[in-house]
Every structure is written in C-alpha cells, then in structure tokens.
Image (cartoon, rainbow over all chains, first blue to last red; front, top):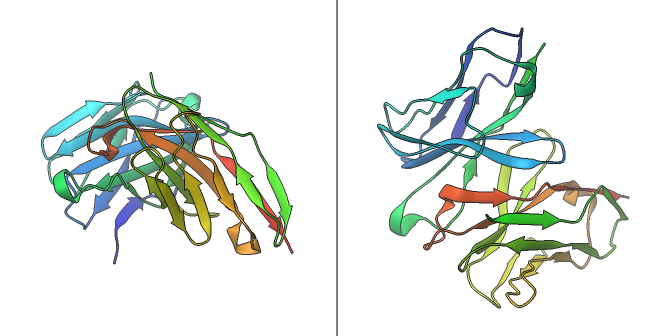
Length: 115
Length: 115
C-alpha cells in the first residue's frame, strides 16, 4: 500500500544548484499535483497534471518545471535554486471523473533548504 | 478569486475540552468544502468534507456543517484527545464535480492538546 511516494525527504542545496524532487503513485490516478507549504501561508499549488503528457501551471509556478511522461510519475525540477524556494513540498494525486470525490492523496513531503 | 480564511493559531486545549476552529470562504459558484489534517512528520489527509449547502461532514468525532448563508465551515469536536494534536487545514474546491484539481487551502491551525 505505497500510495504517493516522494523522494528525497530532506535536501540541502546551494543557491544556483539544480535538483529534481521525485513523486510516484501506484493508484493509477490521472491527476497529480505539486504544492509548497510555507509557514502562515497554507499550501500553494505549483503545477498540476491531468494525465500523461499534460501539465499546467498553478498559483506559484515560477522557478519550477514539471513533466508527465507516465501516469505514475510526476517529477518537479528546480533548475537554479534560490533561497525563496526553501519550503516543504508535497505531491498529491486523485482520480478523475466518476471516481473523483474531491479528495487529494498526499505524499509525506520533501523538506528543501536552499542556502 | 477563491480564498479560505482560518482562525489563527496556535490553539492549546486540555484533554476533553471542546474544540472549534473557524473557517470562512470566498468562492464563485457552489464549492465543495474540506478539512484536512496533518500529523507531525506526515502529509495531509482528508478528515471530512461536504459538497453542498447544509451538508454535515463527520469523521473521528469531528464535525463541520456547510453554511452557505454565512460562507462558513467551522470544525468542531466535543472532546479532544492528545492524539488530535496536529495542524488542521480548511480547503475548498470550486470545480463543478468536486474536482480536486484546484483546491484552495487556508493557512492552517496548529492544535496542541495537553493531558
């Protein structure tokens, strides 16, 4: 019962470095998304995907890239990390259509620190 | 745009006390409303939801009623336990079918229950 799996759980980067946060789900969910969680600001949507080959921007997409080559995987890429990207990142998924009850299934989060 | 406002925390209660966490929202149309809970070191998980006016969502002793006239969805529990200590997020989805694609979250309320 893996659900939504995120790696790594912790990461420290220097300004300007690049990295990829991995997200995989084994529930055959069409919809996947990335949120960032900052103190006092709740969760804000970065990017989302409604299926393989389809991605779209959320509320705070700048500085992040995504791709969706398979149903299972939805990696988030930081091309040139900045201290403002220090945050906790959550990947989430849900089914579409008739199976969609409005519930998002979250991973355990990835804590990123950019020095 | 859509927005969710939660009461500011942190909230500290003694075991068996009554809990209320206020949540009000602004949205177009008829949103679905959710409460998510985040236990320490974990991702968010759905606690309860309501999809139309006057619906009451309930789970694990928690309840919330969708009040369209006051645009509110306050979370209540009659007797809290130490194990309820967590961060609680109010959220809405304004998709026509309760789609989770565009969830808007409140800033979260930290609850600590003391024995």
